[in-house]
Amino acid sequence: MSEPVANGAAAEANGPTFSVEKIYVKDVSFEAPGAPQVFSEQGQPSLEMNLNQRVQRVADDLFEVELGVTLTCKLVDKTVYLVEVRQAGLFGLAGFDDQTLDAMLGVHCPTILYPYARQTVSDLITAGGFPPFLLQPINFEGLYAEGLRQRAQQGGLAGAETAGNA
Image (cartoon, rainbow, N blue to C red; front, side, top):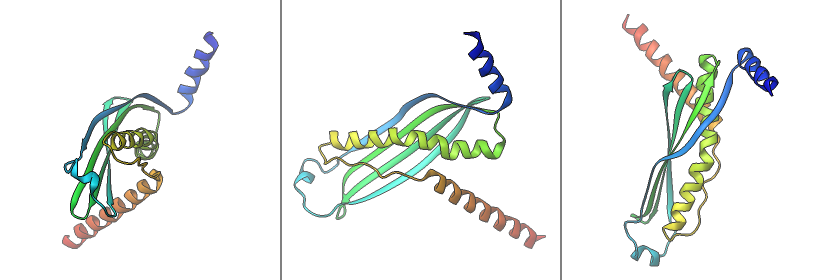
């Protein structure tokens, strides 16, 4: 039995480690401001989804990653329902260089959290008396790459402004 511990210790000393410590719902909200009249309304609803992420270092190698999903369903100009879910997780990350750590927190962690948030959103909509709805999968790697590109552009613009003022 002591052999796996020795192998685990050797693996830890030789490279980075990643662990999922806890996954939990941090905050949830569901509103159906027009109920019950909205159930008899006719028309094609429109959906708007907003996604955000927050990362907080809790300890040396422990991070809280929070994925926020807000889904608004409207019919003409009336809000049919509004769902807000903040799905969070505690992740242990050790031995990563800064760039890889940033990518792990920006891609890997939200990819793990999203199915939980997706299910919670679906459950809330159904419990609110509306037809079942599942959010589509999200490419967090693509979102992260776009964020890096935007940061690089903003950094380039800031550098150009500084150079222009010198």
